[in-house]
Image (cartoon, rainbow, N blue to C red; front, side, top):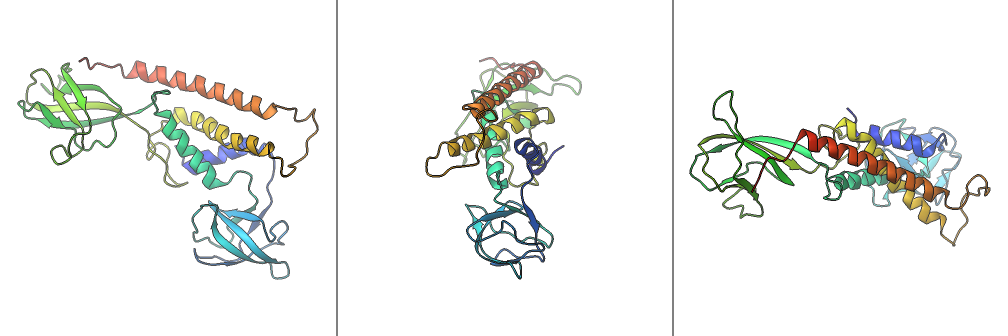
Length: 294
């Protein structure tokens, strides 16, 4: 099982491909409102007008005093959130792939997996009590439903037959149906406990510590899809930057980095990601065949 932070560590290792970014450490802890940082080692590239990252916070440097290794800073730069940081926390100078940006890319990819085009989902199972007479019954606790997979009724302790004449209705008044979702019965059904399974989207990671399986509900077998998705989104923005005319970036010889090389890499990652999505979609279709027929 992986956290969002661990998954992004793996992505960063592949993106950096052995490049070591300049690092330093905090000499003492700071709270979320501190505007003066004292560093443990020589400042090096930490100078006025640059940005560094601690955890997932970006920090802009106003002034740098090399003798005392002191920085006067602006917190929460680039839309990140100012937070407390402990002594010895790692500071990365001008990070190529900021953690908050990578976390945003991860959440965009999590949302994308459950889109109709990709068709992946998590399975939610719940029991609903049915009185045998109501035509509609609230789907208790449901917050986001893509589609029903199946509905069974507990006829005996060892017999859960399918209910065929049932369908999902959305956007109902919450004053009558608390979840806004209801099961609609077009055929008679005996009273009892209904075993309902439905498709639901994956859930975003709220922090780097969020567990990919228990919080986002993405199975371990799909983690490589997320890694490729984050990689693709992060590299796409660097392709834009390469085309800026205002400033010259890092120089490369034509035989080292020919025109279109980055675009070709992105195309390869996109193709691999698409193939993996198709494979996982086929697996889900085999595991959870649709039994509801209207």
